[in-house]
Structures are given as structure tokens and as C-alpha cells.
Length: 220
Image (tube, rainbow, N blue to C red; front, side, top):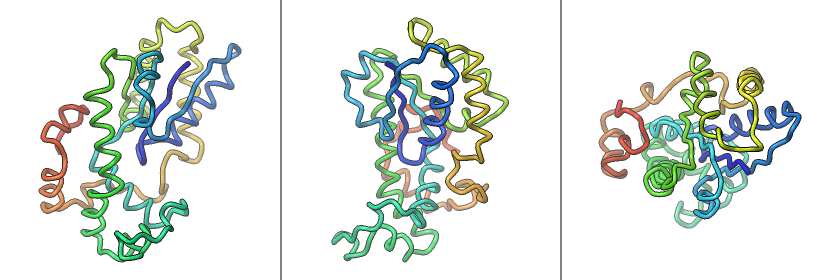
């Protein structure tokens, strides 16, 4: 069994699409299971199976959450909550200016995703059964071969695995499917277009000091 994982706004659609395509390409079908919130995967499953989990730069998770939660039709975003003065999550974020939206997400949904990534990478990969892949690398066409080699090496001892050639095809095909891995195909902005000094300062107060070192990203 192969475990696939992601976190909210880290590339769920992309990794799921890649393995759906790969599954169809292989004559000898392999078993896999998808966790949209990998932190929900039990420790026992992690110990007994190899996993591929997609992560993302924390600042970009925050920006993506803002864009997505402002417009998404997901049900949980439309439930009125007393903690938001009887507004829904979406109404709450829509009522804020751009700077406050970032600060809001930093303390809400995005915070959960970032902390879950940190905890899983620091405390739950004790047997090195999880291969964490940055979505920034997965979507970089110049790194497809490098990513495929990492994945194949990770599963080198698996009997019911897949071929390098089909993995390449699956990634390339998924990337060309109307950019289905992106929340907003018209938006090419990054956190650099939105973050100000106060956002960086607030981030430092909220998250562990060793966050970036633990998950393998630079503090930009």
C-alpha cells in the first residue's frame, strides 16, 4: 500500500491526479490511499507503509488560503460561528482588508496546515517511510527527472510499484490538465506581493523558531 498525503492548500489535486493517471498507466495496478490532511494518517500506517506527502512554503500556504477561502463553496466556510460574531469563515475574511486577511489566516486555517506539516516532519517520520516533496519542485518542469528519481528510490524495495517512465508521463500529463493543481489560474502573485513587515513579525510570534529549518525552506 502506498500512502499519498497533502495538507490544505499544498497540492492535493495535483498529487491525486498524478497517481490517478499513473494507476491507469500501469498494467500491474498498485494500491494507494489518499489523505487530504496527512496529519490524520495514523502512526501505525506511517510505520508500515511508504508515503509521499506534498508540502508548500508556509507564506504561500497563507496567501493561497486567503484567495481560496474568499470564494470557495466548501460547506465549512459557510457555517455561522459564534467565534466570528455569528459570521461564517468566508464572511469573516471577506470583511477584512488585505493586510488583515493575511493576519487572520495566519491564526486560523493556514496556521493549522503549517503546524501539521511541522509536526509530521519533525516527529512522525522516525523510520524515514515518508518522502516529503515540495510542490514548488513538483511543478518545476526542470526538476521532473530529479523528483521522479527521488520517488523511485523511495519505493525501490516495493514489490507492487510503478515504472519510472510511467511516472514521468503521469507528472507531465497532470501538469498539462488545465493547470488543475492551481486554485486560481489567473493569479501568478506570490507572498512577496502581499507580505509586509508586520506580517513577517506576526509570523515569528506564532510559529516555532525552527519551523523553516525543520521543513527545509529558506526564510525569505
